[in-house]
Image (cartoon, rainbow, N blue to C red; front, side, top):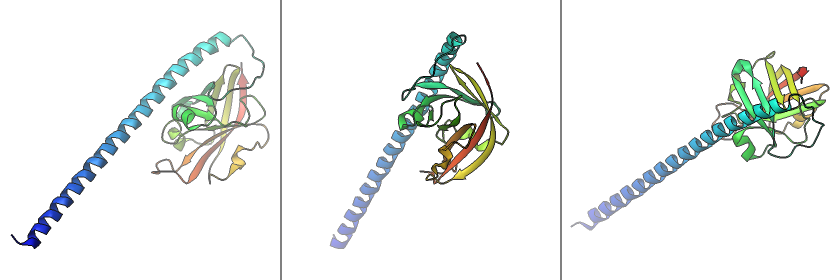
Length: 206
């Protein structure tokens, strides 16, 4: 047998083995990725359903009891935010860690609490809870329900800013609600900008 043909056959077999190994590696990685994404999605939905039920129960129990202001702890349920026109209703936790944002919308520490003067800043992932914000419009109503009361906001402005623009967290007078998510909404990978919704409190009731 020609040594050249033997070498060619061996090289071909090696290439086939490498391609086959790469194929199974990518296939395994893809299946693992889809499995994890499915788990995250289901876990978040189960968590939201459980916490929304618990929040409704606590709201009914506390409806006639006023609570004095107190410190909130990381991971504590603060309430429920809703944008009725968009069909968006989500539990809000205090904190903005990856674990919190995987299951809920997070209240950014250091910003005001609902009902206080200042800027109540909430962050959420664009590919889960805050995806409906792509269709939000000025004038849309936002309701933030807490054990202490209900707070109604009206959207005043929408903007896209770089992630380094921390001015969105500052208070500009009055009682403001700021929603923050990544932008563009359908960007693959780490999105380069931030989508900002700014609303002003217009009503409150116990």
